[in-house]
Image 1 (cartoon, rainbow, N blue to C red):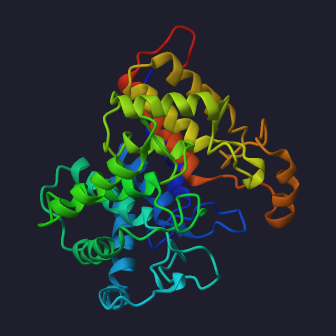
Image 2 (cartoon, rainbow, N blue to C red):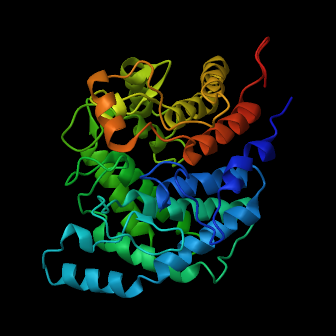
Length: 361
């Protein structure tokens, strides 16, 4: 039986703000805001469920929110062209209030991956509806984003986990390449910068025959899964990618999938969204049994209270669990990105993996 994707989309629709934005988690003290990263995959899941109107509201909100920062981007580009130093807080923010306002609260804002991801997601949104021309409502926000990324894609920044600043991160560069490539059917002149980003990944972010977390660092991070699925920077059967997946399996797959081996955030538990991501990869690689197994693990994490960001079972560094609980309370639940990835994996298993005897589909 095919999964009811619209039913799985209900928690996402429930928490969409009137503006079109999505909070990362409506109940966690640090996450009532909209990250481009989380929200783009939430919108992508809604498109997979056929909820194109809701997804479109998000993309209109993102486009307008970014377009309103046109003068800020122009000033940043001028500073770079003059060779002047740019303080970290001057860059575009990674998250916004649900009304589109920027937040001046000291959060590590300079993260480029979300800007590439929203372009990728917009491309997927347009493609899902068979649109070959970009509606004008999106164009100003896209143009501002492209100007920003063309000027600063080489700039070291925080990674997708808002850690490790001043480094070049593989999943960030893959996000930018995917976003730039997604806009090529709609905007001119993007091929050269896209090629430069891809060359940087190839030349600096492959070490020992596999992808690495960031330049000069030999370990893997589960966000490296994104490079092929869904961003297509590498094929799922590319030897570099398959070796990377094997390294993730060997070091980070313990029931669910951990972010990276030295993770200390809430002790470094298994992340629901990354477990779904590995299942997504398995579905694309034709590994149905493993995809079903991870889907079952994810279903077990709901327990009637929504899917969490991460579990506290089998944490990598348990001494840090109480520290983070003391700072911010229990780990975020429900995390809308986790719900989005669950929906995506259900759709992928149904599309790519045959149901197995004794395993509900």
